[in-house]
Length: 346
Ligand SMILES: Nc1nc2c(ncn2[C@@H]2O[C@H](COP(=O)(O)OP(=O)(O)OP(=O)(O)O)[C@@H](O)[C@H]2O)c(=O)[nH]1
Ligand SMILES: [Mg+2]
Image (cartoon, helix red, strand yellow):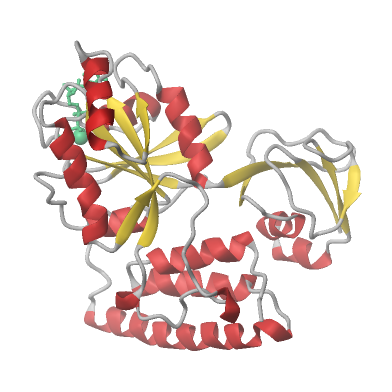
């Protein structure tokens, strides 16, 4: 019997599948238990999650005792904003320059390769949506730095950077693409991800052994940097012809800024989220800090973001913007769209 899990639940489950430490798994599982629909059809799923929480708590306890969970990972960055986007690419392609152009992060930019040694996060924006970019050390001859593949798994999307002025352009691109397959992932450019899971049991992949799991789809946007360099656009055309890649490609220049707004818009689209604004009765909408919800998120999901008490006591909401009449009254199940203004009534 189908459980009809919400997009928020699916997002938590995606985080569970991408988690690389017992603590991250535990956090995601607890979120899943909180969000799973509580009805008869989902009892089996709830039980499975509870059992997995019990096992994972034991793993967390063991890791704490042996100290194995305590090592510092220079590639590990806590997620902030609407999503975390990791930069991936060969040496000297301009990864740090892109992060430097769009955020206040202190990145190392140099004419020589291997100038970046650890992950450096910075907050970029698409309109009023904050999106976290994470600068990373380069992939050399297809070999990632330690911690890099875990960082790719954890990121919501990957920005694969290629250098239109580099002779090894195609090799560098293909080595980066190969990394995904070698580490159980499949690069995709579409926002809609098909995990190919069994919806019959409601919960997706929870009983699966990680090693037997199918390839994990990973959203990837390819940016062809240095479009300002001599001959760059000819190289771009040749690159497209020779690689025939299905991944979305965007020419950009970190130096001139060309293509960067389009890149941020494409990343926003890829994160599969919407922004909604809260409003108090009789007051204007708070446009300062939008709430970020997965596409398909409901009024109830937004209420949960505000406070669990608000979600539990919600009577109805009034909505402005999108396809509804201004100020229309809706229930907690109403699916919100990007840009909605929501007044919660408890
Ligand atoms: N012409 C041009 N040069 C660029 C552009 N972006 C970066 N560069 C130059 O490319 C060189 C390498 O830039 P970085 O940003 O350090 O490259 P990186 O990919 O971070 O390098 P590693 O950290 O060593 O992997 C620097 O000399 C930059 O000034 C661009 O859009 N156009
Ligand atoms: Mg760098």
